[in-house]
Length: 328
Image: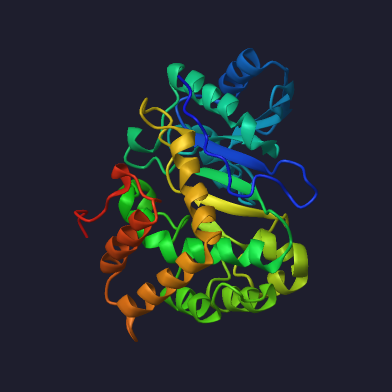
């Protein structure tokens, strides 16, 4: 049975259309040709060989799908790296399935595709010590209003420690610099700005303290839709794709585990937006975060537990997410 995907608190964009989400899923165990054939068999459409370890599926039930060997390695400027990718890397370098922006109501079909890939032998993060496979959601912003951009960022920054302790990152992914926690100095700056901050002020704080893509919530694509040149001038890397979407970068794809689901991972973002929609809760979390951190932050553990208590009081935490007894 396909798990249910919780609706977003703001399900529609400013033009009245349903908000959309693009999804990127990484896995091992299958090559791009096999994965594309499974997708076309389940969702319809036509498979195209684009070369360069890339397949597309056109006219599927989810629109166009791209399926390829991880582009970080495949598009390396160094021939030796590309050669190693083709020969030695198949067991370590993930294949990615990337969707177009699709309505949230279509996510169950993508979940069924994950089930089919698992049955065919797809492997996730925990199948190998070095399997650093991830899952990314690119969630369309509700509007370009300051609150619809800044409050989800503030909410995520405040509850990130809790989310990481509620569902710890596998060590194979934790040692890779793909989904670092936000630096404390950024969270402190966002708390000082508060839930009514302007997008310009929040963007400046973000670029001052976290001008990098490699965080659990990458805000650079959103900020770049407003001021692309400033973002490019100040970011640490050169890869940037401006789009009005929150780049939510989950550190694990456990596609081979029957009790893992896209819906559970989606729920993390839904909680972020539910927190963002409650300004009283945001202010309580800000006060609690400042109280726990003081002038110097020695540990994130105490705040993770306290944050969980606050979320539980507001009905936003399940038994699965209880971190009170988690190890440091």
